[in-house]
Image (cartoon, rainbow, N blue to C red; front, side, top):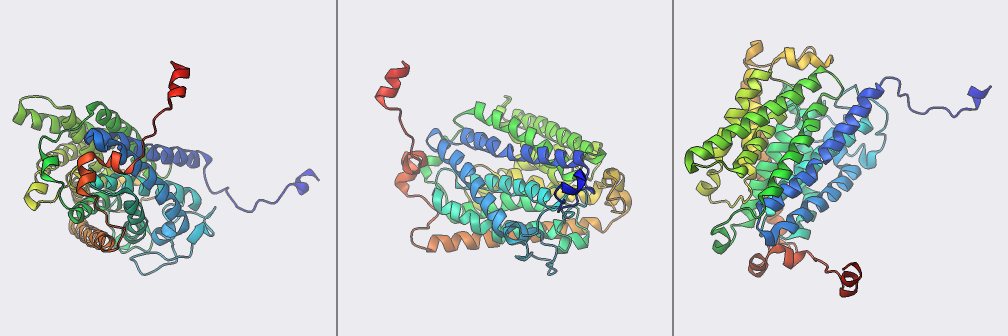
Length: 436
């Protein structure tokens, strides 16, 4: 009789393991924790007069992405009813019917949880992209730019490898946690944005150095901490593949940090904290597409190779004369590309199948699947070309619209973006006297 009075459950949750659900919620929270990590990293790397503006940009962009994701970006990326292979549709706009059905990315978790987890990926991607505005970008036009960038760049590129109808997914591209959408998206997108903004004034390029190395170090470790949730959570369950991805992430980060530091010592004769942090981040980025695909020993090699390539890759911006102030292209795009190509060589079903779900997916050369390398290479080219062209086009259009120019004035660049665009309130005299 009592059971008859209980309200009827509208959503069948019996197919989902509560432990897996709790695990992905925590992993998503760890990914969100990477956003303040980027705030500290960017503020420490910039001049003091521009530090607060980068914190503001990362924070505000997080809010813009969250609203955009809820309204339609999730549907554009992951709507399973879209069959064009390029982008989703508006079937799940406003998260309509996104609740307890098996998610489009994994049958192990409900669609609503999958949306939450992928939302944090998008937030981190845009926070990385905010490094492109360093020291000469206007803030509010950039936030409007973010709205269009998420819709027209991130959502389609996320659809390709992760939507069940995406062309890259059907073609067999191996992109575990976002070498294309996250790393190429932010790295190549940042390069395009920096190109449209133009170079900083010559006086700002003289004797440029990070203003707070302590913040850089703190931000790097916060990123490492969150990146474990980023990569381990992409197994979509508390399983052995998640543990494997977490250990791969740490190995890649450690070897990357050591390699960059030694390369700097060879040139400068001193160990650098910035170099150690840069190499660690390069390793973390390289692990993003590969940590759930390749053996542990391959991650050791990957960390060394990615860090070395990224170290020398910081010189590319001087060759092409694009003022990529915080090295988004060298750190994120190049390391992400290396990680994706490593999947072509070292991905193996022995690692992929550890989640107990993807037992039939082939690896790369290790599994004698020789075509995987050209699949990975073509995917890299497609991501780079699309992201650069569309990002540059959106930015160019913004700069042509009165009031939406993305570049700050010369005076703003001189006095600092903080003083020009971010209000810093001062405590009143009576308040200070009360607490003195």
